[in-house]
Amino acid sequence: MGQLPGFTGPEVALDPVQLIGPDGAPTTENRYSRDLPEETLCWLYELMVLTRELDTEFVNLQRQGELGLYASCRGQEAAQIGAAAGLRKTDWLFPQYRELGVFVTRGIPPWHVASAWRGTWNGGLEFTAKCCAPISVPIGTQALHAVGAAMAAQRLDEDSVTVAFVGDGATSEGDVHEALNFAAVFATPCVFYVQNNQWAISVPLRKQTAAPSLAHKAIGYGMPGIRVDGNDPLACYAVMAEAAERARSGGGPSLIEAVTYRLGPHTTSDDPTRYRSGAELEHWAALDPIPRYRTYLRNLGVWSQRLEDRVAARAKRVRTELRDATVGAADADIDEVFTAVYADITPELQQQREALRAELARER
Image (cartoon, rainbow, N blue to C red; front, side, top):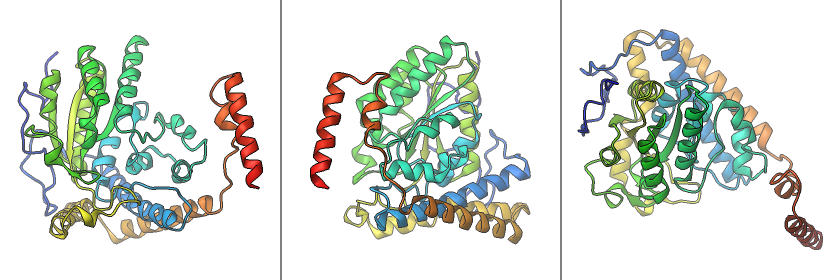
């Protein structure tokens, strides 16, 4: 089949696709349409603000001892929400651990996300109801899961697309290489969405790859690669929708590099001041996707104080619901660690369960 716009041949453009400039004005890019319905434009803004507010609440909850850990997505809202909004609700998502914006877009209750970070055993089970795999903390393993699910969809003759959300650091992992290679060889309906937030914990991008960009890695696998401005929700929406349609119609996988920035620490256990400069942070803070998109909507005549007030009210309500559902929540039944593995518990697991019960009894 013919290639879609933006995927013309093996070359990968270094300039990211950008529909909204840093000043909030439309760019001269004309390969992709900005003509989304007004309600969709407002919906994207609402999701971005809601994600930012919830992200702040998650950090607060962790600092107050209610969560074991949390990985902030502050600064990456446009990359996540734009991409997730450009998909069908039946397309399967395979996230890493920083995809709060993806979860919010899919309608996964924030307290289910909190349950996972709290360590409640069933914390991720509700994700599957929204065609979303549970949070994956091991770096890059979810890419293989996404390809496997895409291969299954092929065999079942389904028209769903799978998306593997990975970070720039994950592209250095063998699992991601294997996933990209399998996806390309078997022409699976899968999209690899790399959020390049410039840092793999404390390792900068320049020490992760010698390629001109992460999108250039696609050439070696024989699939289209494209860079997009990850702080531009409309560009992320358009590029993801294009790649998903290509995969759905039999054109195989694609690799998208969303160029963005992690404004916060890697996780709540990290101190980013030890490895990056204040000047760098100031530079990227000026490119914050939320005020940028707000300016675009204002210039378009879509933004209003009424919209802002409605979004703020919803954010406050959901933050309260998250806190009420999380603070003091009961711990999981430890037996589920053993009984949820097999239909019938094995003798080995039975022995482990009894040993743990005895150890916990001694601590009481």
